[in-house]
Image 1: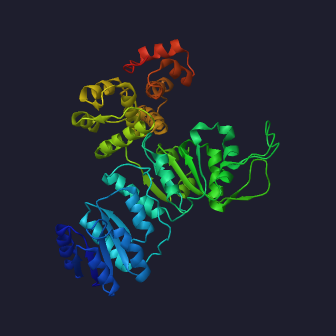
Image 2: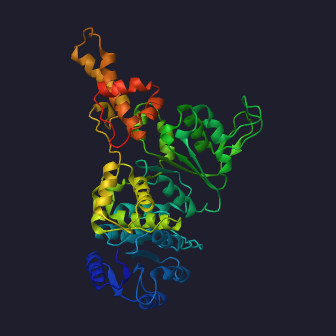
Amino acid sequence: MSATILVADDDRAIRTVLNQALARLGHDVRMTGSATTLWRWIADGDGDLVITDVIMPDENGLDLIPRIKKLRPDLRVIVMSAQNTLLTAVKATERGAFEYLPKPFDLRELISVVERALSAPASTPTDEAVDDEQLPLIGRSPAMQEIYRSIARLMGTDLSVLITGESGTGKELVARALHDFGKRRTGPFVAINMAAIPRELIESELFGHERGAFTGAAQRSAGRFEQAKGGTLFLDEIGDMPFEAQTRLLRVLQEGEYTSVGGRSPIRADSRIIAATHRDLSQLIRQGAFREDLFYRLNVAPIRIPPLRERTTDIPGLVRHFASQAAKEGLPAKVLDEAAMERLRRYRWPGNVRELENLVRRLAALYSQEVIGLDVIESELAAAPAALPVSTEAASDEGLGSAVERHINEYFVAHKGAMPAAGLYDRVLREIERPLIVATLVATRGNQIKAAHVLGLNRNTLRKKIRELDIPVVRGLK
């Protein structure tokens, strides 16, 4: 279906590319580098679709959108911008843009958006704009752009969101951005870490308890669902939630109400649910450790946070941001020279953004020079605990439970149905014990006293196993 498309961009090359691509689809394309000209066309009733840049010589394209929606509410607007931050995506969406595309854009994606815009019903804009405040998320890489767009699309809904990503990638920051820019922004943001709550207390923490519900319950206590009324409830590390508590959570999501521990009267749930995990929930489902029906209730709108090694172009911006934060807190201002910055781009960042933030704060606190060079960065990275090698298959992506099951199957197949010889227990134990100790040492940064405590082993027993299993000691730590 042919349409008249109005294109406003002060870059002649972009106008030419769009003109050729859209004309080949049979559309009539009118182009300008001026917001004033674009507005005159719109005011005259011209055009079925608008594609506009944000920064133009005479006016900001975002400022045009409310006027366009007031004069011609059915006219759809696609916004493009090289100012590809979260705030740009949010402002474009809140002011009524049909879609936001960061520059440089993919031409096939833009054509797809144009086709959707010409066939979809017009959206209703909101009147409330977002204040130009300090951004909660930093980065202009393509991976971060997709996250910004997801946040912009989801901020006007109450859909449940499941955020996945490695530890230290900033999952809670994304959850807070969804809340702060969402329609429940005036309500509370309540977070609970499932991995930090004892199993026997999780239901009380979530749903609250009545006086006398259990020993020590001297008075009524509101749970996190009640505290989050009218706002957002962030369930961090949902993969560590006990199975029995998963059943109660599923019922709340299905029925929209719950009862406190020891209570009888149902309480209406009124909060948006955002969950996050660094674990592979599909693997936990296969192992029987996570409810599949709960997964689908939570995973209505998935957002994956990329590890820092997948968005190294964001590192300079993150370094400047963290250095600025450190300076505001009273630490000396620091900058990195180009060689030092390039070394950071080539590092693998096992601790992700959190590790980078800690490094920048350490540079500000411990070094006297204003400009940090390559020698300092090399020294810092050499002292960082590296991820220890884990060669056993039990610690691979297939997961511990699947590895055990595989060993059992292989063991019986090897004996071709006859009575197997003894030794299966020792074989599987050897496969599991080494990666378990290695992972614990990494988590405790090589501190054998802490690792022994976490494992429930005597320190001498742990040292003996480290020697027997040929586990390397983390460099620079005891």
